[in-house]
Image 1 (tube, helix red, strand yellow):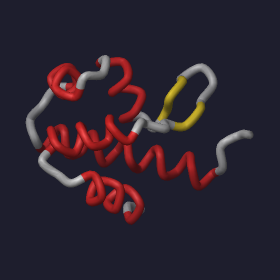
Image 2 (image 1 turned 180 degrees about the vertical axis):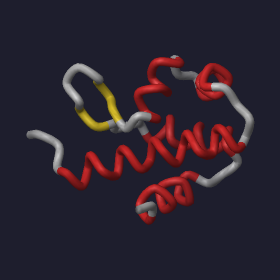
Image 3 (image 1 turned 60 degrees about the vertical axis):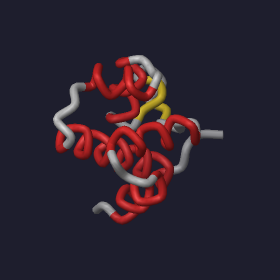
Image 4 (image 1 turned 90 degrees about the vertical axis):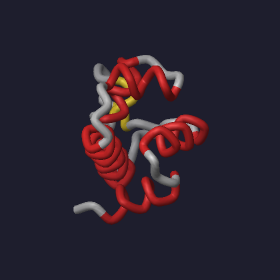
Length: 88
């Protein structure tokens, strides 16, 4: 089933929030990706709100990835998701 507009928007806002917090933390994409245990390309896709550039499918990160991102960015995963959900 194709992703809904709501899914696409939330994935994009989550990516923007991860990127904002990464930059605030003065971490490069490579540094954060290594600390979380994902590839730099995976992080780049997540920050752009995508899971596949060619297909344009929205990001759908695993819970473990979100928890690790929150840990490395100094924020609880629920706060990370809440910030993405409330972003306009």
